[in-house]
Length: 133
Image 1 (tube, one colour):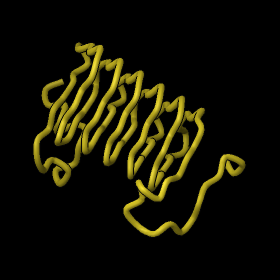
Image 2 (cartoon, one colour):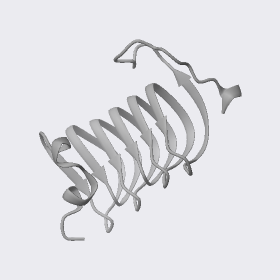
Image 3 (cartoon, helix red, strand yellow):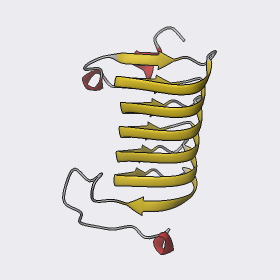
Image 4 (cartoon, one colour):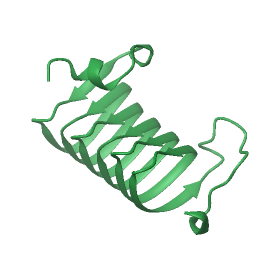
């Protein structure tokens, strides 16, 4: 992979610092970033960042706190974010606290949902309950 940042993120999303955990890297422990974090490798532990993108090859096991999260890979554990976008290749298993949620057709999810007003950055119009999923 010559340029994982360019391949995963749109040009207008590249503002600020971008950190990449590439597919040959495995991290056990805590990862903190004040900017954008792209994971194509494996992380086991805690992640705290403003913007998180888990690429198709990325695997995260643990607790994630992010301003926004785009999931194309696998996440097992707890995810808390204002905005969550689960792509068709995404696999989320665990607990999710969110302000805004988008799930593409084909995504694999097995989780407990909790919409929280503290994570919402806009008025709530439609609420999704566990019974509707």
